[in-house]
Image (tube, rainbow, N blue to C red):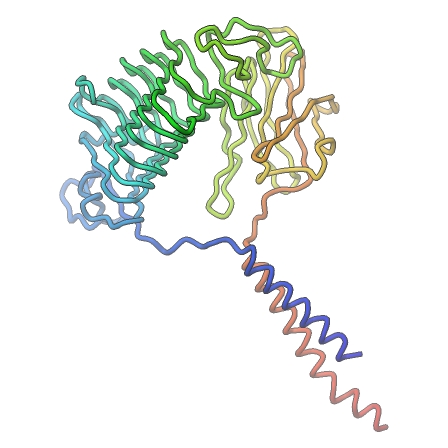
Length: 413
């Protein structure tokens, strides 16, 4: 009997190890962090939290490939050239400001796989090539969660491929918000593109660039060029969209006049909410509605997303919620539960590989919405679970071996 138990335990251990080899996620190397703070006027300047560099350019000069440069709050009046593969992270997008002082391009990226996040980037020069961010012949660049404003062009992707522009406010740029020429396979999503001369201009591509879940607001020319204007499930919000949503799913039923194609235009503004970070991945839930959405929370213990809706319009209004399928999901789409205050309400749901889309209608002036799934993102890495199983297995083996002499003695008696 003991041999059978040991064989079962050993088999389970081998299965766990084999599974971990197949599915364990890669762990990032322990890379260097460099710090920058404009308040360090007197030095010394070593790039440490205690003695940070005074400006971003100095941090870049001392950085190596794959480093992270963390920039504390302040106003950095400089023109930055990123010529190494690294991440440039601001402490707070509203108070960590890179100002071009109306001269040249504020940030120029000339290396693949650069990430820029958490800044206000403003005041480029007025020459034809001057931009808030200019990306030249790169791939894999990520520009996320920045405010890019008051420049000739907000973001210029020139001969740049497979890059992501996401979660940015791109506003008050005199020529255009985003310009892509030429470039293939770029994705622009979850941005608010507001009051630029032209919102987005896309030209000369072989592999389509994709734009979805952006808010195009009051740009004299909202968009020009050829692109994929939706992700297969929903498109963008356009402040000048004149169409209707007859079936109440939050998506307009008619073509957009200035693009002349049907591409699933959203009826309500898209608001992006941070649901949390697990295993170095941050998950965002986006909600489209004509009402004001606030007080977003994700309760991982209860597997519930909640938020408040303030309906100032007074009519029957829809809400459309997109939930990342790696954040929270159900085995069957009908298992989702949607509550308005304390009452369960009907909803429609669809899904693709990345998101579950839940939409419902309401006419209450205010309500709290609860959306409950059945599974959530794993909070513990596979490797930690593996070590727990290994410890339990060997503990069981030790206990069985310690009991063996006593059992043999009992048989002799």
